[in-house]
Image (cartoon, rainbow, N blue to C red; front, side):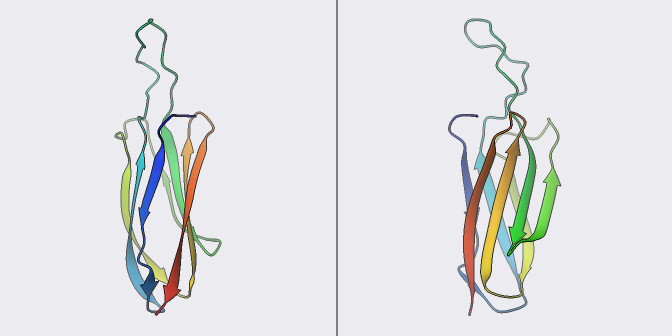
Length: 109
């Protein structure tokens, strides 16, 4: 598991039924390529976020596959339509097998 990994998500607290909202996500992650060495000359193991998903009330909203050339601290911004009150679940998958997730509720105004 990579150290210092912190997912951050911005979702409006409320929306009208059927409204499209903008969601912003950022995960603090070093994205080690597996090609660098530490001070002792040992290879730093590869640790790259390779997939990001977002679900709303159990239904997939977005599923992104990332390649090794993605930058440190991947940022995504996308729109989603909110049909009802519920919960967004955001999940990031790491090459090393780690999974990072966070949840954000939204109410209908």
